[in-house]
Image (cartoon, rainbow, N blue to C red; front, side, top):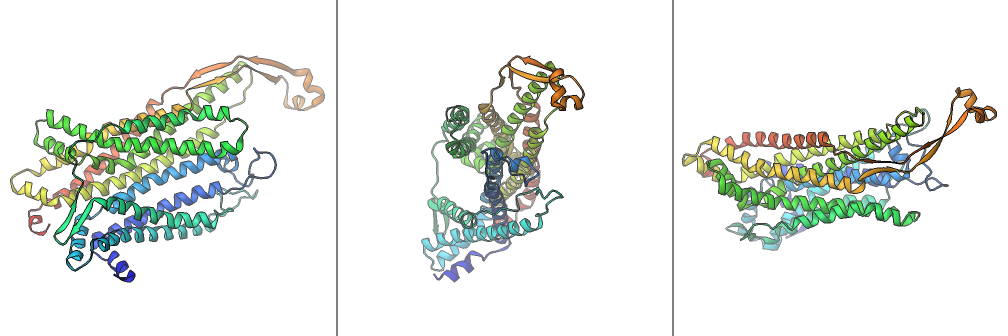
Length: 507
């Protein structure tokens, strides 16, 4: 089969196939923007001189201070996690119709390898279109947002550009990763002229070994402070080791939570099957036990956003406690130094990023739930034809979505909190001395008179425990659960259309 024919067949299909390509390309575009933004932050050059010298051309301290750029880039990369999960959900949209189309190609004489390459090429091309569009949006936005103020300072790092190799790695790397992921998912799929079958039958439920990944991720975060203490002064090693620990620990914990959701789904299905009495709960129990990994696929983006948000809540609690300790020490010394809102205002930006991630994850939930309902529409129509009320099926869909979602969200909140608390368990300050000038500003600024009005105030060391941010965690969990409820409501709208008896003839 010629390459031009492969490309034409990869982009062919009905409206569902077109929607899948567009949504996959949109997800790739968003992931490209997040990746390029992170690379742009890392591309800022350190000014000559002291290692802590700031880049004065930026108004935001997140960009001007070298020590904060790594965390900023990490946060931007974490925004790409729910976007990539959304891309995975979009790639499954309209899977039954695509399976029939691939089977028709086999019937027309295509080999199994050609059919597999066709499916892989479809995802790769859609992702490539998205990354190219993302690169165009990034370059155009870079020109439009380059607006220095009166002092010549910039709000965004529009004066720097990642290297050509980094740009090429993002634009071409994401489609390659998407294509490889598709090939990996198709390794157990057999496409024959009679249809598509999957050799993924599981005789036993998932095991809770994902807890090891969660423990490893938390332990990695706990090890950050000892590593920084041992390598104090070795900036060359700390510059790459600390971000690597953050990235490895965060991704490991996220993978553990997402994979562990499969065990949670299977366990919830077993409990429902054992104790439930209603037909809707029993139907949901059967689905949860038959495909426990559906929960991992469905809630992956949402759980990643919740983990990140819970970790941000723990960091906010640390900054609040630190601010309280500083104000208390200043009060004891008789100094009114005010408060430093930088860190708390920065956490406001992080919370906004978490809200955006939850919205993106909600989009992925809607796509996943609607895809599942449409894929099983013939089974639902058969149940309705035999007398099962649509209200029972609606309740079954709600049971199937909410039963694993509630414990999975609680697990994600706990893991995110443990990651944040792994960095800082308490606030500890040693005793210090403060020079206080009890006079007017003019007398204190004059070296000749300042010494007459100054006094030395000794402050004792303080150790303060960091409070658990229960209120913020509750709001985060409620927001995630609300996203699931909205998703269920949207999915039920499609359920009524998908349970028409006509589906028994057309599906």
